[in-house]
Length: 121
Image (tube, rainbow, N blue to C red; front, side, top):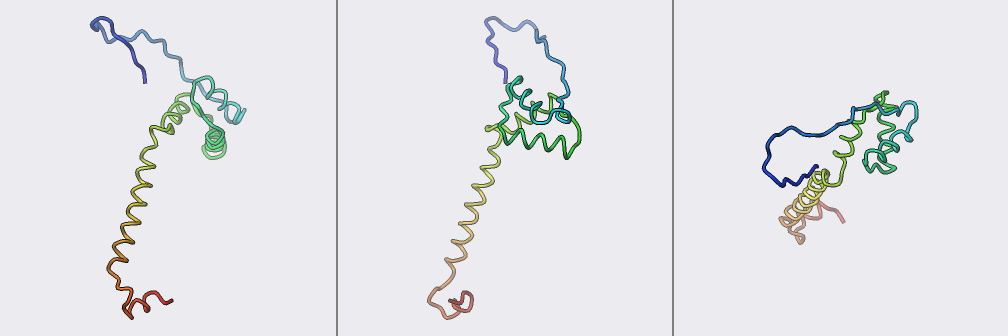
């Protein structure tokens, strides 16, 4: 995310930004070291698990070098604030699981002889 303070009204939407051209990261040739270098250079904050996973993905599965744009996108997509869907789904599963068993067991009469047929002790 980019923030900029405007001290006067905007006169144009033209940006005075000099973007860097994308480049290919030499994972096939240099492996994990190439990804670690680009992570440091671009501030991607890859940890050891990320480095191993992405090296395996590009070297062994896709059999090609990633671009700097792909590395940036992977870092953004896997960042902590982008992973809330994971925790939301997991929490929903736990709540649903407990609700299911609450409803299931609440309709049983544990003193009934039929209970022993369902759940022999």
